[in-house]
Image 1 (cartoon, one colour):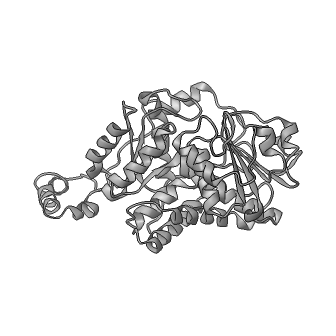
Image 2: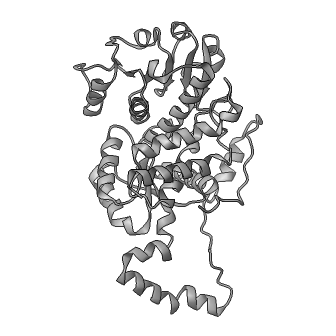
Image 3: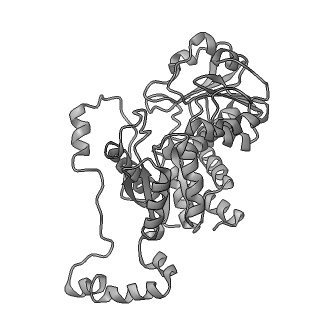
Length: 399
């Protein structure tokens, strides 16, 4: 495995306020560019890189398409794809407005995973059209990172793309969040001496991230999951369930609870907030002893961390200005790096669980109530995740 981008340096965030002028200046002209790996310094180099030399490489690939992996950047290139329908906490703001976010994602791929990526924002929300577009563009890239696509379309889109393409496809809003959440919960339980198999988790929010978090916790052996949407606890036969929620109703809520957040959180061991709603302090106070609260909505957590700490032993958020930031950047650069290093055709559940274990392991030496995951800027994370994911890909036979 080659080293990640060694030229990039990152530092911990400061408390200095960031002005609007500083933000817009930093984005002016975009955040990405293309660098040349073989400098064109003389006529000989030009003849090798372009005509006439390049024709020999093109003819070789025409005779054997597999050679494109060796002689182009395809096998190391990630397409970051969005239709702009669920951007950050901003909602459906359209393809053009989503592009700064996709550029930022590509910058994170390069900085933390050493991978090149291309933002592709599509002026369509039709699942069939998105799939057709990416299938036609398949010769240009080696993996697809789906981003900021609204639920429930995102589930169908990912499932169908995985079948349509022979390369890794990964919806980060789902699986990146779930992987880092699992890593955080594993380490929180180590701090508290608790067993995941004996815990009941309440997940507020049954969109892309909430469904994926429930699935990965179930795969990890969680005792029970209580899943909430805007209409309350999800259970079999409840009105207003789409097909995805109907399937989740069959495998969650072993406690057979009914009602809303008040009924769900009473006696719960873990709360995971992914709904952009609010949770009153008195409801958090009804959770089990040594409770764990992951209030992950941005920019405003479901409950302020200082308030949550009055009743919970460990508190995490999605923000960088509080301890225990659950940030997807801990997951996706290493996951894609490992998948591409292994030549994986897809990203399996074993690979996701391996990524969670690797993230958790990096933080073990400094483990404590305010240190259950590594810093998002920790340079050890992506290489460890990549190595674990590549091993899991080989074990699963998809490499």
